[in-house]
Image (tube, rainbow over all chains, first blue to last red; front, side, top):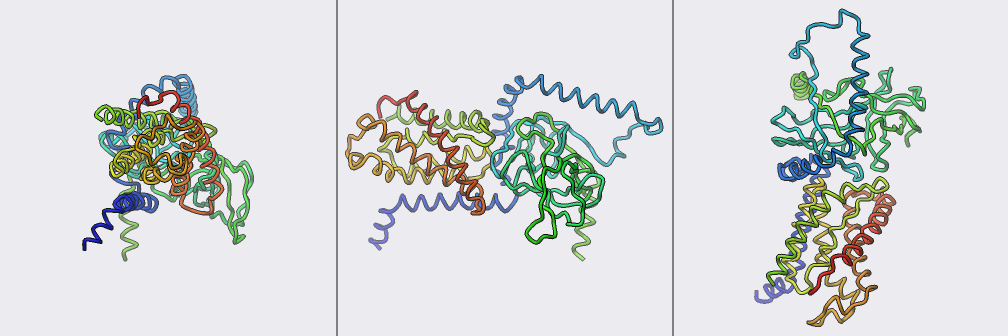
Length: 271
Length: 168
């Protein structure tokens, strides 16, 4: 017994290292396979507040660029409004529309790691919920993953766990939109069947198959493509519309029909 | 002793904040975010309690993980560096390190830079390997380790000559 205790005392540092490494490994592997940890993420108030202060300071340097982008979007929306046929302008009743839109500001951006998470400055108190879609004026950005009272983290499309339904614009051939962690300006569209005519320069948009994003939100353009190992599906390289390194204002989309869709789907699976 | 504790707490907080607010947003050439906080393991007192050192390393790593949403990767790399530090020191400074009055002042610049380089290399290898955790991305891991490692090393050498501790 004495010798066992002596042995443990002698190698106590190695045991301590083993113990701490085990904790760290379990946390790492869990965050690879499951959702991001509920407790240790940057939407928690402490992390959110520090990033909020940092973003307040740095946002002054990008104001000119950001204003120009918002003005461009306003012009586009006004053009749509003025050219709309008269009968489409009906009294707006927000309870009737399926998609609800919120705006938010990005306070932490990240695009260089294989699993990128962004933090935004709106949370539960502003009506943000898990699994809302996040877009910018140019295209899709990600999906809300964790929500605290005043902040939320977003799983970026630049995340190896991300998998979004997308299709080639104007057709109904859809595939999975994923990222291979290599380059932050391009992502991949896979599972497009071989018989589909694919052309470099075609636009990729979100498909209507998920209850997170509305249909036809721009994603990117086809940069190049080739057949996968089994020669029956295309692997398409998509150049993203969003400059992922330079993002400030984002929009959150909530699908009001989502609980109903999910309830229906889960009851179908249970039968 | 008390001033040493105070200085290390101050370093802990300042290094963690600089890492999170400045160096994590650098994205030099699109992917290089130097992890300058590893200089904490170079500056930490040599004759300290090893268990306490490992706990501190774990906390520092976890703190940075929470802010960068990379759960426990920095913590894992940090405790490994903390655990391996005595071995690395013996490797770089030879038997001198065993003496009671060992001090960085008695070592050459080349020895100190080698020591720092080993710390950075070990930390980055573990960090980037577990970040991707797949051997099919082997070249990507190597590219990240070396590109980021070199920038981290340069910054750490600059930091260590700018804020050199007077008596440790």
